[in-house]
Image (cartoon, rainbow, N blue to C red):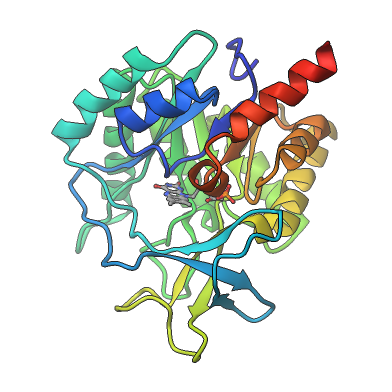
Length: 316
Ligand SMILES: Cc1cc2nc3c(=O)[nH]c(=O)nc-3n(C[C@H](O)[C@H](O)[C@H](O)COP(=O)(O)O)c2cc1C
């Protein structure tokens, strides 16, 4: 069960790899049952220049470009895409198609993000988030994932929107009162367990669940110490995949512990470094309502088939 719906399994694809209805349909057929349509916006936005994905080694001080490794646990990559989006006219039609193409026991979540405009204030950004969410729900999304792990445009000290709790709460509140489907808050890692707890508690009235951990946002260098991605604003990137599991799973465990303590009762969708079937099963056993994969979905599309085989074997 997820958000009150019976599902074939609790395994899914996180926001990103499923770029349009063709990808949604293909991964639904591969046996992923929670399908997240890649983040959409109220306006067209192109992706950053190539390369925008690089294999990395996630070291102590920074992530460093490396050769693709196959150490058994899967790939670790740095992603610097710039949260691109198709034209709303295009994705609204295509999202409807995606909904028609998924099967029984599967759920389609749409990831949405607000677009700050030059000179625009917080009210404008909040309204923009709600508009995109409204369009996505109208097109048939069965839940809305609100992307809050993105830079807060209103502060000088760099921080993410989920770290600005009043702003995050206002975005969720407006979205929640705009759409009739469940609303999920996507967040990144917290600096302390207390911050995680306080944020989840303050956002709980307006969210049906949390999706975490978005990524480890950090500096990425090539092997000569130069920035790995060319262009302004790309010194840091989303480091994701196998090597982020230690950090991500600790945050997920904290979230599960606070829920168990009875602070609030919301769904917890685990993401971040789930690169093996064992890891997916671990987070589900710990109590997560879903295990979502992004990097593994790209490099290992048969992941869901293996996840199901093991489950079937255990039942038999
Ligand atoms: C190629 C790629 C594209 C992504 N695009 C998005 C996106 O559009 N929106 C979003 O919220 N997260 C995006 N993500 C982040 C994933 O949803 C996920 O949080 C992250 O990759 C951690 O999971 P993983 O370790 O299984 O990859 C993307 C990740 C990858 C690998």
